[in-house]
Length: 307
Image (tube, rainbow, N blue to C red; front, side, top):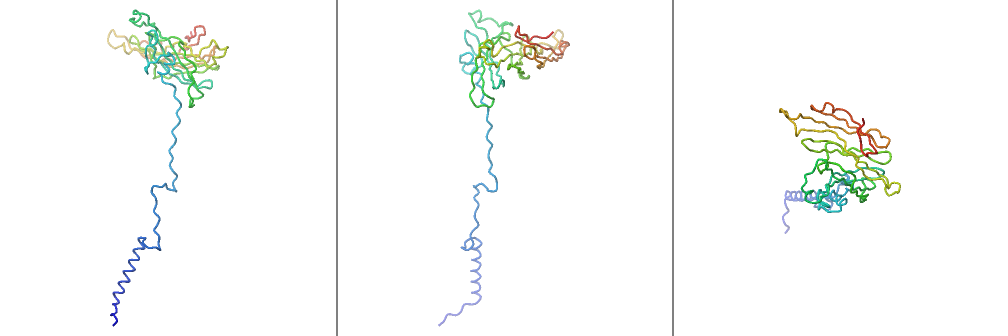
């Protein structure tokens, strides 16, 4: 006996279900005939975008030794990082100023310091610094090929004395409101003017401490009497008596003067003239406004105001 035939509607439903299943597998990539699209690795760099590169940090010029290290080179006594400390025979050494510059094909750096007079006995130890007591100026100079060179600095020399300046056993304070000025000469020298202020008796005095640098080869016999650095004087450039003046009867009238330094043509000695253009306010400054020119006096080894 043969089984009864299946209804035609059931055969059509089975065929439809088979077709739907085949379509679903194809859509999901489950079939073997249609491969799945490749997946993108999000961690790999995109080929259509150039890679981002970080710029290399700029090279920094090798810095000169620290002020405390330069003080040691000058005085040969370790201050354990201090910038003012006692050295031989009770004298106190103090860091003053560091200056870098280019001259005669080299990059130079000079550290300036000063020391108070030596002390001999209790009388000197207890003495009050007098207005006319100056301090001894010292220096150490280093050089290298250029400011950007990574080579180590070479010590040119340490100088135990290049002159005297200041008062009350101290040097002037570096005035950061004014620029340090310098002028090179045709024969390889340089005039350096460092702005300072000094407070005493209620008055702030402004001035420039002036130095002469010589880049000549001092090892040559012909240059045996030349010095690397020489202090060549102080040039006044203003006063301010704000701390000792007022508007009350009997008070001192307030005034303020301030000068600007510039260089002029060189004289017979090859060093430039120095001009101070003064401006002032207050009752005592009627004659202070104007320009004073200073010329180098080779005999006195300092700048003198022209008549």
